[in-house]
Length: 317
Image (cartoon, rainbow, N blue to C red; front, side, top):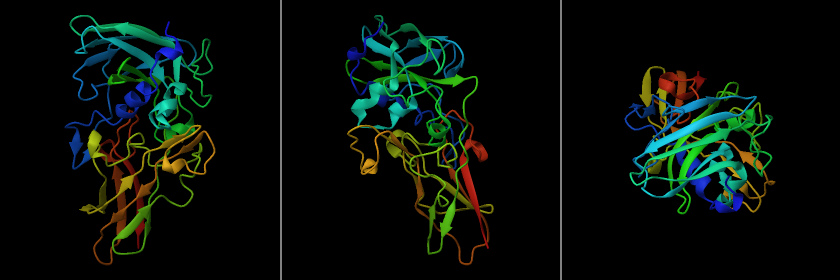
């Protein structure tokens, strides 16, 4: 059993932050992701892992423990790693040193890879409310995530594989509970001008995020676009024609005690800030018809737009 003080503070945040931003690769169509993120190596790792035999993730029970066996190759040889379950809040928390408060370190395992870089480890994945239950220091860290957290793009708890000493993330797998919330669709509001400014609809994604919120949830851990981790930008269509845009969705932020993120200034501890839309759309003179914004979807949840995108539309008259 792993003791809490054995885990460097940034391991789980680094692993979770990268997790949903990856897996896009060549799965792009006109700059839009066509498949959800999956359990793949986190660059520069070339590791290959399965979680109960699946490279994407695994189903878990909402009412009892679920055993998950993680089998990996291509990891650093003879190296001590950690395999742990974490709330997605770990990926957006400020300050990052608070990330361990979002993980159930009681069920984590420390495992040493063999001389070829292979690893096999089994941990018990739990859910909030079961016996034993998922238990993190932060009472807001629950698995599956709450409706408000999912609306903010924090769609799945994860099992992570990372270096215990250096906090380098190598691989992850999504936990898919039998019943868990799905995110509400985002909104699009255009403001007159040349070019037009785009935002969420008024009061659609308030701070803190609520169960009724409608936020741009497709790339909440990294924001979109984010070239550093391979997340492409938005596509905007007027009727059937693609038009220029500078749209961006901000990453979600979870404000813990002593938060350092600028977005947390003046907010109460444990406030979750959802992803918000900003930027401009370049339209022809006297445009009419339907404008649709398409955000790349880097989560395991299916998008509501074409080619697995996260979409919202508004009508110009």
